[in-house]
Amino acid sequence: MKRARHGNCLIILLLLILFFFLVFNMSIWETALKTLFPQEKEVIYPRATLAVLVGEHLILVSVSTLMALFTGLLFGIFVTRPVGRDFLEIVNDITALAQTFPPVAVLALAVPLMGFGVKPTVGALFLFSILPILRNTISGLDSLAPEVLEAARGMGLSRLQILLKIELPLALPVIMAGIRIAVVINIGTATVGAVVGAGGLGAPIISGLVRNNPAFVLEGAATAAFLAVIADQLLSSIERVMVKTEY
Amino acid sequence: MIELKSITKKYSKLTAVNEISFRVEEGEICVLIGPSGCGKTTIIKMINRMLEPTSGEIYIQGKNIEESKPEILRRNIGYVIQNIGLFPHMTVAENIGVVPRLLGWSKNSITARTEELLDLLGLDPDEYSDKYPGKLSGGEAQRIGVARALAADPPLLLMDEPFGAVDPLNRERLQIEFLKIQRKLKKTVIFVTHDLDEAIRLADTIVLLKEGSIIQKDTPENMLAHPKNRFVKNFVGTDRALKRLARFTVADYLSKAEGLCIEKNISQCIKNKRDKLQNRFLWITDRQGRLMGWLDIEAFLAQDDIEEALTRVNPAEIALGADFTLKEALARMLSQGVSAIPVIDNADRLIGEINLSTIEKITQEGYPK
Ligand SMILES: Nc1ncnc2c1ncn2[C@@H]1O[C@H](COP(=O)(O)OP(=O)(O)OP(=O)(O)O)[C@@H](O)[C@H]1O
Ligand SMILES: [Mg+2]
Image (tube, rainbow over all chains, first blue to last red; front, side, top):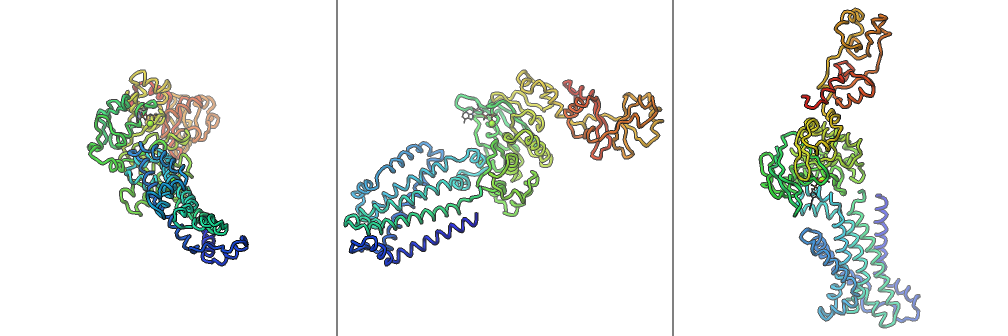
């Protein structure tokens, strides 16, 4: 068990080192992309360095995910309390609906309201990541064995103590899985933000599509994919540390 | 210790509990029994305020429970629920420590208490403290459930079918252990069960319920001897006379055994006593008073040979201990086809005998204890 965990940390560390190495060593990109696309004069997106693009991308993802985490947990907890039970179905319906909007459509609707740039993108990503978090929070909290909750109440734990010491720890694996899904989806979806000028790894992709330059597209897409893999690994190992595997 | 005064609980139309009143004295085990849906769980849950009665009052140690905050009240009442409900993400030790932690005990005293309780319930603390509930057998989990309820040493225990989820053999063992613990701790216990044998074994008082009302509240002996009506009679069953015997121990009905020590001038003794001896058989002991076997007096008198007339036995196989129940004594008599069984102490010494005639008298209703 211990050995497996160490192995996992090592893999993540290696992936991170590789990632930073690639982000800060543009010469490698240049050589690689030149060989792949010899017909292109320019193979590296010129308007921002890859490091800046990654930074912008991470900000888009983390701000929207944190907002979704906060809201998702709050609503998830609320609708599983006796007072909020009545809203359970409505909340489920709304989040399911939010997921069916294509990201570009949400952006198109958001721009007249919030203008161009980061804000509408974060808003759209927020809407997209709230569903897995909220849905998993609800199912995690709702599937707990009734006798466990009854025992907790019968032993004299207050509502808040039951939530914090019994319900959330027991629902944690399911909630963490929701967060992981949200982050990975967000990293991919955030590229769409470049359409409305939010920057990030979508910028070279859009630019490459417009200028018909596949090298730009690959630069953005490959980096975003790599980022998603790392995030997935990182979150799943955090999950393993937080959730005791023994039980 | 605890008193319910005309407690009623209604769910819209259904009256789950109807005008129930009873008292349980300090240190007593009161068993609530009755068919499914008769309101046993509802009564238990009103005592720790998991449910509020529609009307009526409950007093614990003279204090109306409505004066205490529910959480505070519950921390001072041990509660074992039917499905145990151990917290799966906490170790055995953490599970047991929940209420002491709520009460602000120090870490050291919680650890000490946990070990004490595991010992008390016959589980090795070193082996079990750090186990997760998922790794426990049914019987072990039930024991931890009881340990957790006892953790903060509450004077009152509510147990809702605590041994319901284990096989009959394990259940009997748990009952015996629980009685042993109870003799030491002297808790006031309200115990819910479906199982009449369990009730008879454990109860000081049985409260028999039907559709939310008390049908009979009595000692197990009396309930079995004098069922109040047809419902009680059916409930306790046609073998109630036999069941009742399980409430009495051999020690209480010991008769003087006619025994002789083999070393003495035994032939002379027997000849002298001959007219006074009522039985054909005589228990024979060694010099330390340990049971050796029995002597057929007529055979002896005919041949005047001790060894010929003496049947040697293994005391552990033939005799009973004083803590056996009369039900077990009767079973032994029937299987061996005898009307008297010797009773021995821990060192195999003959201390008396138990007679079929005594048991017959007890099964006749109303025979005083
Ligand atoms: N929340 C509720 N709403 C409506 N009726 C209820 C509710 N809880 C219990 N009842 C009813 O009250 C009656 C008593 O229930 P209770 O759980 O006390 O029975 P019980 O004697 O414990 O039964 P069992 O032996 O099956 O555990 C039953 O008829 C049950 O259907
Ligand atoms: Mg019940």
